[in-house]
Image (tube, rainbow, N blue to C red; front, side):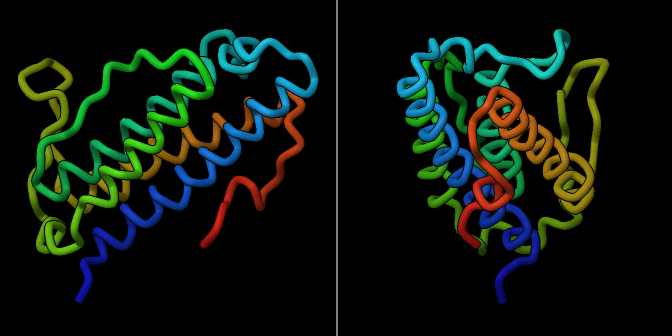
Length: 169
C-alpha cells in the first residue's frame, strides 16, 4: 500500500509545479508578445511587503523539495537561488520535478510520527510530527507561494484561470 503521506505530498507538488511551470512559460510569451520587460513581471508583487514573483516561485520549489526530502529521510537538495529570468525558473522547476521523481513512496512509510525539526539549534527551532509537518506547515506554505505566484501574474494581466492553476490531475 502506498503511504498516504506520499500521496498527499509528492503527487500534489508535481501537479502544482507542473502547472506553475506552464503558467510561467505563458508569462514569458505574454511579456514578449506585449513588449513587456520580463523583469516587470518577475519583480512584481501584490503588496510592497511581499516577495516578488521570482522569490515566490523559488520558495514554492524549496518547500516541495524540503518537505519531500524530510519525509523521505533523505538530504534536502539545495539550490543557489540565483534565478533571474523565466528561463532560470523553468530550469529550477525542471530540477525540482526531477528530484520529486526520485523520491519513492516506500520512503514515506511510517513517517507520520517521525520527528521533523525545523531551524535546529536556533531560537526558532520547532519540532513537529511528520503528519503535522505535512498537513499544517508544509502544504499550507507550499500552496501560499504557488497561489501568490499565480495571483501576481493574473493581477498583471496574464490571461489565466483556475484550469491553468490546477494543471492536469
